[in-house]
Structures are given as C-alpha cells and as structure tokens.
Length: 415
RNA sequence: GCGGGUGUAGCUCAGUGGUAGAGCAGCGGUUUGUGGUUCCGCUGGCCGCGGGUUCAAUCCCCGUCACUCGCCCCA
Image 1: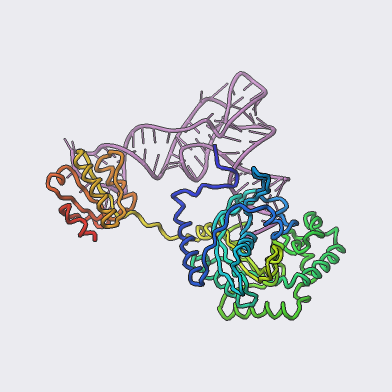
Image 2 (image 1 turned 180 degrees about the vertical axis):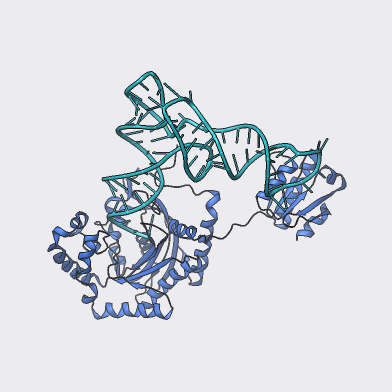
C-alpha cells in the first residue's frame, strides 16, 4: 500500500515549516485587511472550463474530472481563481460597488508528471482583490505578495512583470505572432508548431533555444499598447519603484490561463530547479462576465506552498520548532507513577505547561535520556522517596541545577 | 504525454552471480535514583514489486510501480 502517485503525507517532523508559512499568511493578509474565503475543493467542471480556457493544458489534459453518482461532471479544483469568482458572484461579494479582499490556502489537483516542486495534489496560498481596476489595486496585490515572501525570508527570488493589455489588443497581437511565426514555421519546435494557432503567446515563453531566438525578433506587445494599457502599466511600475520593490520587466512573460489581461507577474527562485516559479498572478478584468456576472475588474496571485517550503529549506530559513517545556519522571513504584500522572495533569491544566510523561514504564535513566533528546527545559522527578516526603526534584536540564520542592509549591513555582 | 537516472536496515549509502554490510539513529549496559561525551553490546533488511535467464540472482534481461533530472506545463 502506498499513497497515490504525486501525493504526499505531510509528517509530524515536517509540519513546523507548514505552520510557519500558515502563520505568515495569516499575519500578512491581516495587515492588508484580507479575510479568508474557504471554497469547496470540488466544483462543476464547467466552472474551470469557462474560466481557465478550453485550450489550456490545465483544462485540456490535467483535470481530475469525473461524473458523480447523479451524472454531473465534477472536477477537483486545479486552481482557485475560477472558484473564487464563482463564489463571489453567487454570494454577491462585490454588490453595490463594493470591493472584496479575500485570501485562500488549501489543496489543488492536477494530473501531471510529478517532479521536484510539482505534485498532483499541491497547496496554494493566494489573494484576490475583486472589484478594483486601478494601478493602486495592482500595487496592493504586488506589495502584499512581496511582503509575504520577505516575511518568509526567501531571498533568492525575482519578480518578473509584464502587461497583456486588453483582450482586443491581445487578439491583434496574437494575429501578428501567428503571421510572424508562420513565416518561420520550419524553425519552430514541434511543440510550438502545434500551439501556433491555439495559443501563440505561449511560444514566447518556450525554453527551446530555436524558439527563443525566434521570439527575440518577434513582434512586441509594447509596440501595440493603447494609451490606457500603457498608462496603467507605467503607473504600476512607478509604484513598485516608490515602494523599492525590485522587478524585471519581461516582455516574454505570458501566463498559462486565458483570463488574464493587463498586469501579469511571476516570482521565481533559483532554489527550485526546473519548476522555478514560486507563484504568480495577474489582472483578470473580464472573468466575472464569463460567468454571467457584472463587470468586476480584479487582480490576484497564488503561491505554491510546497515551493515556498523548498526555497525556505534551501536557505535554512525555517525557524526551529519549540520543544515541550517539561518532563515529569516517575519510576519503580505504582505510587510514584500515579503521582507523576496527577502532577503532569495539574501542570497542564492549571499552569498551561506542555508536559511529557513516560508511557512505557521505563527506567529513570531512559526517561532522562528522552527528556534530553526532546530538548526539554525542566525535568520533575517524583520517585518513591519523593512520594513518601510529598515533594519532588525540579531539575533545569540546561544548567544541570536541581532543587527539592514540595508538590504543592509546583504550580506557584512555574506560574 | 516524451527522454535520462535511481530504488539495499528508520536515515545516508557501500557491496558481490552463491540468500548482505558501514555510519548515523533506536534500545540496553558501563555496579544497582539522574541526561548530553566516551566505551561495550543488541535490535533491525521478501536488497521496490512481478516475470525471465541460470544449478543458483540483491547483482544479468524484460516488465511494472515509485522517486528524481530535463521537456512540456505551471504553483
């Protein structure tokens, strides 16, 4: 028996890193006034088909979709934004000109070949700012993402940013790309040839050397920008400058989901290998309309939590987990062990201490060793002699100092 | 979906066509009520799984599964 390919058990020994990331998520989002939205992990398949785009790999070949017992087509969510928008429309989160600031964190599913930083069940944290169209919204999202990475201590990273302008301009741009690449069809990689009609933007992103060379001389989106798109992008960049957030404008940055427009961005890290994106996002001004909602310009990002952990581990920036505070030791007699159980219980309930107790009937020495191994601060020994005298020995393991206390004094001693 | 690598004790890894070792970890002991250092001992492995070749396979061949590197894709 083993876990499903591409899925992982997160074990007690590694949970501390996850808790660290989760603590930072709660902290940073609260600084910006974002509140958590918890969506189901299943949606009707149509939610993703409509939002993400039929031609994308995600929808085309990576979704876990299945008919449920009633015959409806259900999909395990491969990404969050579609579901967030569905939910925002359903519950009118942006009614009456209101904006909504939400975040989410949880599991997502894509049927892909597992690799470092790529699993079939993975976890994302993301934020969405719904209902605001200006560059101020973009910078809020960008700054939040930046602050989050800073707070995790992830140093080796870059922010790449680009604009995809409006759907109309992107359509024109696609046509230009198609005609440009068509005239160099034979020089294009096989993959890119097959994508030429369906998703020519992706060719710009190709890692194939031949494609790269061609892309360098391809038509540029910047040359086709309308005044509004250009102005929006420039304002975003100048706000990044104002906040001293470093970035690189990358005209070749395209994102794989159809719904983006205007600002798109990606955080990469050299600590990750081939799957080098820590996370990314962008503006999606027309997604609500796709669902039959009213026009609600929005922007958001998502980070891969496994990748954040990978980057943190690579530079050892995960802080030490804290150890239990006490170990109460008894041995040899039933009275001693009984006293230990009562004492430990009292320390937990009355003093709020983290207390470990031996449950294997082991020797004093074995318990001392375990206490040391666990990094325990104080050991309390209640042996047969102490039981007779109604006292105990308190030993500070780091200094080696020990004192005799009456049992009744313990609560007061540890506050 | 495509190409390469790997798969031996809890962990990191050696190894040989004749059914296996090290280090670390774990447990116990070092004269009987006290941890971290020594020293000693012990536990622990269908050598990923299935099939084939062979008198004999952990080692060779095929398949399969998993992980891993890259492509693809993306978080």
